[in-house]
Image (cartoon, rainbow, N blue to C red):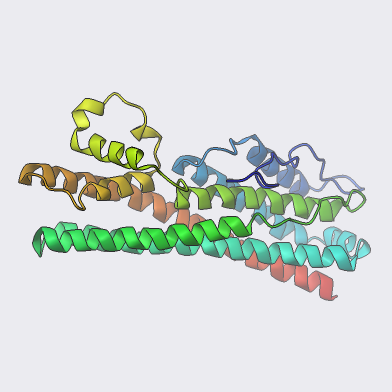
Length: 293
């Protein structure tokens, strides 16, 4: 992905987000959550890393919710009122909702298709032809999901409002929280979308690994792949292959195992996004109420 402001290390962990008076405990908590996100590996898109980031992001936005309910916070925002950054903050809150929705929809679609495929494999009805049709159906759905995720990622490359409100502490804080949130969403969408392209030789290499698992047991490349990539690779080994019954059964078992590992991961990420989405809605409502006073 091309370099963008989202890929650059945010400076939110270095900024003090205090009000003129003694910092409220909620502000301290926001600061701590931002530091945790800033200390996490921005380039890591493993499922465990994403789950941890989402959990931290939920904690951060819970603090934001409570922070916006404080009379002190509302007073500071009203005093710093400026039409330009009011529009920026509202646009930012809507952007977060849009990206969160895109990520959630991609995971839901993936989960539904995976469950349908698992059901077909368990029943083993219709023989190899039906299974191959379902595999093709899943792979086509994955292309749709990847395209949607890539579109969302491309949309995130749009310039964000510059964080130059040095004299507007509360505004700068909310902008930094938005930037931290977008970083996490970017990692999640990249996980769903997977690599942008893969050479034919690389695709054949994946098939080779599945057909000859013992010969590549000590290689590390496969372990570096995400759970979604492993499912895609296992499914590709079934389509268009002429193999013995025993080899075919091995491929099917690989698919079933990969799908079994994927399901709880997707479910966990989806639940995290759903919880976060509800918090983002409440935050936007709070901002609208403050600005309309």
